[in-house]
Length: 403
Ligand code: SAJ
Image (cartoon, rainbow, N blue to C red; front, side, top):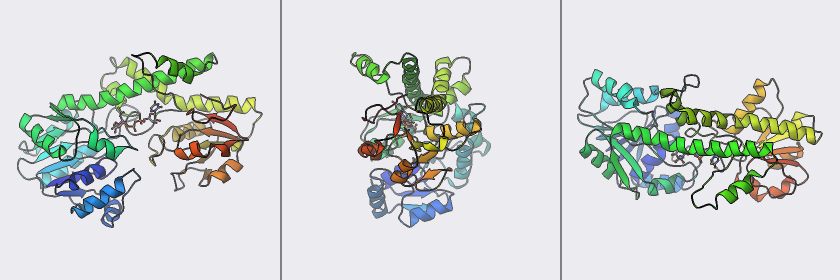
């Protein structure tokens, strides 16, 4: 039996996937509201295919509980926030989950940590807990997730995976468990290597996005079209530049690379600069808004609206989103008034937020496209007559401003 601990963006789909592939699964989370919702047959976030998978898992007997269970294998997928000042990972949730697992785990149980942790966390923070409790019998494993919000279910099935374990046989056992649904290649390695690979993968992407963002700034300086330049460069067989954007959000690419900067401050130079470049993009957008307002004689900030609040297109996840970062920056400049709308955010989370696209557009004259949701790509004729600042390069109307 597998007890999945932490039923968020990673834990829930993983639990559902295992259950619908014949594994006996109980999903546990201390959040009572969340468990009640799951027990009543409702999912807790939007994701392509998750509702069908949920039904399948329920048919296969998945259960949910606020209590940790007696199980052969635990999969821990709780959040790992990072300290914004020190840039170090804060593994308190993982550590407390392990402490609570120790209370119920039978001898020789396997404890898989899926949460992203910085290299060395298992040795530095988890092993000492297990040793202090005289539970060296427990088998620690690190199996970092790799799925991308928006395409999670497909990627759970198809992505290759990494499993880090102290003993090869334990790694192979966990590999068999994941292979119940995963069609990708599953590599078994040691724990520290697995920890490092996860963070390196996200850092690779962060550095490459930073390169695209830096190019956007260089091209802006000389009034060059960055998208045309990237398109042409990418025709070279060994060049593959990513896309610039209004900033980097999400809980991974905007966070994980800081673990390396925090742990290796004198070595991680390119990474440090890249993260600063990405983090500076919302301010760059704010500055562009100011320039575009001046050029169009718009002096009233309440005539400016940000389209999109999520960290990327077609998901309802706002963690670290460039729009929220921009609004924060607006506040730091002691200003307020920008209007905001996102079709996928139904709750009121910021001031001046709209829930109707037409009303939002009626009230503003400059629209800033922050997120390329399908909605705005499909309905772009509604933007006619507005000054448009498209940070995502998806609007095809003449006279659009870019980064
Ligand atoms: N972005 C750009 N330009 C691009 C691509 C992305 O500005 O060319 C921005 C997006 O708009 C978004 C941010 O970067 O704000 C991150 O989005 P993403 O789609 O690149 O990645 P995430 O954060 O949704 O998921 C990543 C994935 N990691 C990699 O691609 C290496 C995913 O596989 C991981 O599982 C996930 O992080 C994680 O949980 O670690």
